[in-house]
Amino acid sequence: MNHGDQDSNTGNGLQQIAVGEVHDVTIEKIVYGGDGLARIGKQAVFIPFSAVGDRLRVRITGTERNFARASIEQVIVESDDRRVPPCDSFGDCGGCQLQHLAYPAQLRAKAAFVRESLERIGGIEWESEIEVRSASELGYRSRAEIKVKRDTAGHSKIGYFRAGTQDVCDVANCRILLPAANRELQRLHDNPSLIPRDATRVYLTVGDDEVLVTPATGENDRIADIDAMGTAGQRIAGRLYSFGVRSFFQGNRLLVEELVRVAMERSSGKMAVDLYAGVGLFSLQLARNYEQVHAIEGNRSAAAHGIENARANGVNNVRYEPISVEAWLKYKSSDLPSPDLVLLDPPRAGAGPIVIERLVAMNPTAITYVSCDPATLARDLKMLRQYGYIIESITALDMFPQTFHVETVVHLKIRETTPATPATPATTDS
Image (cartoon, rainbow, N blue to C red; front, side):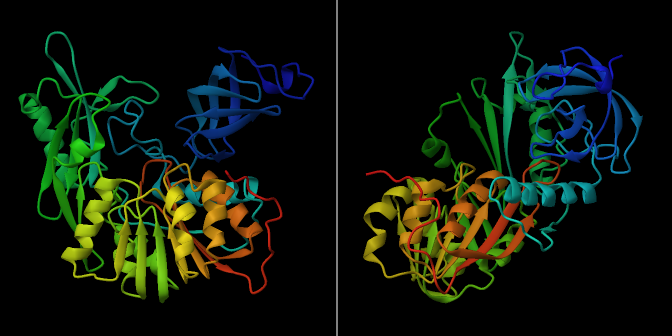
């Protein structure tokens, strides 16, 4: 067995660690992605399915320039954060990363994900507590993409991909699905002939009145074509939302109303702009507190649902623009007066420098940033602060328990006196 303090060091002070070596380590923290972080000397080692305080015997499975990866050979001393995973497929199925952690430990880890990204990437020292709001840790998910793989004999595997692979892990009982969706998954397992032979996936979409079961063929099926195969409906915070099978819509049915409430805090005025509006989750709620709402959504199918949702709810003060956020900000935003609020809910890649630069050119009084990725959130908040916006509040929500994902809502407002240009100007295109 190798021990970190016995290994030779490289010139940068990091251990020379080789694949196959066995070391005893202690887990310091859980990092974004779900792995535990330990150190061998000064070398960082990332270990899946570990818990803070675990004393582990691990085997090195991979090395990079500045870190290594390892798997658990033996739990020497078990952390108090550990528990028996509630799902029998955990560790094989790639859908969840944190089921081995007691739920309070998951919430602590997610608050740390947000705080550490703010500090490391954004240079933001947030002194207040970062609350993580939550609902049930199981039986919450209203949407799932079920993978289907058949062998040459016609036998089917129905479930999710194994982590980091395209191999399908057979899952007949998914504990994070809403019960209605889980029943459909079990039905498909009981009778695989219900799935067309050429289907490679089945989308489960739970509405308030039914579960849509939508087979699809091939990795590159057009989203619009699949979206048109069914429309689900959910009533959220007094509004009825219809959305297609592939339209983006928040998947935690038990916490989505709380997300809306947090995003709507401190929100009222004459005009609001909702960037990356999707099918109108926030736009239709903003319409209660603003005279006019401009909803910007580049996906035409989602925008069509949003327009219909406004009509169906009798909301007449939401104007949908089926155009990309980047193009709208460049060509159309200057036609409007400065908004009282810009709310943005970008995809995982975040907004980025061009969108941020054009957004602040509108000179909104307040900004609400809804993020599903702490790293890109921290990057974009750093830019917004350079443009003179200050953070009023940060709230995290556990929209995907048992996984490493975390949603964050940040409310910002403009300083009374703002700099003309940011401290580090963002690069813009011509």
